[in-house]
Length: 194
Image (tube, rainbow, N blue to C red):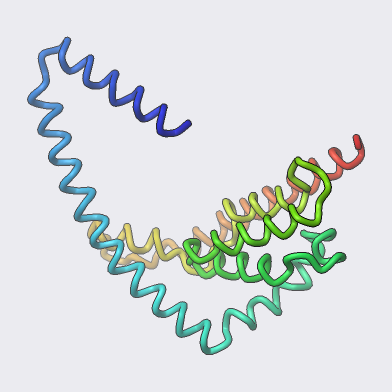
């Protein structure tokens, strides 16, 4: 769907550039945008490699497992069915831990494995409340280390790249609480209708 939207936007842009006789401006913008995007990607790859290395060290030091143990009592309440039936609990805790530490690229495969395990235990063809909650938490998880935002701020020349950490904590915690609350409310409504 997103590809279709971008396709329509690009097509309309080209049509309007032909009709307004500003094709040279569009061409310059395309070349400039392509150059800036390549530079940003190269910079982000370096920063993400750095943070993934740090996270890997933390993982081998046992910090991720410790965080998973700390989260387990909270996650039992957020994912009641999965933890009651002991389905995908390790994947869920590891996924949430990875998201909290800012390595969402490592969290995505864990979330997919968790949802596949939950789907295998469900007889329904629709998503269960626990699956929906996991998807919500994948989008609005509390973020301890906002590595991507720090990398982008650094690439754009911010003098103090880490000054956004406290606002990110506040915003991500608020989003997490609201997202999980809404997911639980709608999950109870759905279960009440079945």
